[in-house]
Every structure is written in structure tokens, then in C-alpha cells.
Image (cartoon, rainbow over all chains, first blue to last red; front, top):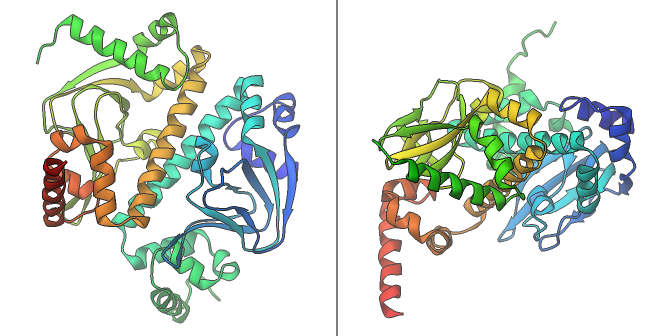
Length: 197
Length: 205
């Protein structure tokens, strides 16, 4: 479990065993069934979680429609991030789509880790920067690309999610009608996939 | 464009004050940072970074007003408006060292305190405590951008307009209407109509 997190971190910063221990000592393992809420709208997000196993989504309600803004799988972080960073109530629900095992740290403990180790503080800065950039990239793509381009790019980057995530959720995440999603999916199926024998 | 030394000094003091809003910073710590800052001055309506260029700087506005936009099929979608004390640069290009898709353009004559990519790395290495400042500023950026994203998706045109006018009355005065409308993702005609609506209300009050 910890190895997975270590690998994730190594992409941002090289921590010594002692530095990693500062973080590891403060982690809790949490297990969830499928369809459990990690955070509700109006609650403050207390945890930043690293998914060891499973799949989760973040969404809000627009009238009665669920609008999905994030889908995360093993090896990725999940939290109502803005609420976690600000300590203010969440605009979003975070819910598991599959049974999940996560490694979590509370905001207070993460603060402590920052105080104890400058390297962890640096890690925090780099991960937060990555959050900002990922968000910016997503928003720019939504403006720049048409529906078909966004579909193809997403499927190209996350082929396995097509199998694991209900289609209506993927459509919501890509901000397109379920019918459009279906049509685009059938369209790529009909085409011979390059490289197939 | 020539400004007096006192003007720069005042802007630096403001910057120090602004940064202290994120993390405590003594005067001498701020002094250590000063040599890393470059002062860059631009007239109004000048492109500070163009599409296809690699962003070299992280900018904080000393004084003036700028916007960031994305050119899409002959249209310009304004994605950020920034005034004194705020950061504005092509973030993806700056961090990943790739050509920018976004354009940063001044609206008013603008002076930036800028830090190059290399200087920023040096700052993080040399000044303890700068990591904390950087982390908190970036967190704040994330929270603001998420708030805006959420508002775009969730709130009605009217709500978005009223919230912005309430929170940024100064910007409504300074920013050309078409940029504001684009930033709030509201049609220019609708924006005009909503603006008249609030005027009526203010007079009544």
C-alpha cells in the first residue's frame, strides 16, 4: 500500500526514508463500500486521500442533475480539494463507485507534516501546483475542443475507465449528452483499430 | 513611461503587505527576495505573452490591469482578469515549458513584478519559508479557480453577474464590458441588460 504512495510521490520529490516516515506516520487506512459518500455538500473536507484500490467520483447537483467534475482511480488523489485546502464547506459530493481502500491524511496532520519537514512542504507545493495546472488544462480543453475531440482525447488517455465507469457518468464528466457519448462510442467501435492483427 | 522611485517603493511595500496575507514575512526576508524580481512595464493593450511563445515569467501586477484569454476560432475567451497584487501569466506554459495557448494582454498601462522560471527555482532553494508562501499562494489560486469553475457550471447568468458586481465593484468600472461579459460567459447584450438592472436598484436604494 505504502509502496504505491511512495511511487506516486517520487514523481514530485525525492524523499528520504525519514521524510517519508513523517508522512506515513500520519496516514490512516479507510475502507469504503461502493456508493458511499466520503463528503457531502456543506461538510468540510477533512481528508486528502490516495486511492490504493477502487474508483470514486466528485459531483454536484444542478437542480436534479448530477454534474461530475472529477473521476479518480487507484494511484490518484481524491478529495473535495478546494474545501480541503480552504477549510470551508464543500460544494461537492465525493462518492465511491467501486469498493475503495484509501490512505488518508487529515488537514491538521498534513499541516504538522509541513512544519516537521521542509521537503514535505515542497511536495505539498508541487502537488497543489499540479492540481492547478490539471484544472487549467481541463478548462482550456473544454473551450478549445469540440465534443468529438474531447471524447477521443479522454478515451485515449483513460481507456480502462470506459469499462469501469457507467456511461452516463462519463458523459456527465465530459459535459455531453448521454446520446452523444453513445454515438461517439459506437463510431470508434466500427472503425478498425490501428494495429489490430 | 517614467515613474518615480517613490512609486516603485510604494508598490513594493504593497507587494510585501499582500504577500503577508499568505504567510508571515519580515522586512528582511522580503529584501532577500527583491533581487529576484524584475520590473517590466507595458503600455495598455500590449500582448505580454502571445500564443505559441513559451512563458518565461510569473507576474504579479504592481499597478495596472491585465487579462488572459484563449483565442478560439476567431473569438477571444477571457479566462482571467487581474489587477494590483494578483498573479497573471500563462501557467501551463510557465510550468511545463511548452508553447502557450493563452495570451496575456494589458488593458491599462501596467507594471509587473516578474520572476523568471530559473529565479523562482533559486528562490525556493535559497530562502527557507518561501516554500510555504508558494504553497499557500498556489492553494489560493486553486480555490479561486475552482470557485469560478463551479459558478460557471452551477449558477445562473443573473447570479454570476450579481455576485461579480458585488465582489468586484472596482473591476466593473475598469474593465471594458465585452471582456467582463466574456469572462462571466454572458452574452454582451445580456450583460448590458443586467447592468441597467443593477443601476436602477442602486438609485432606488
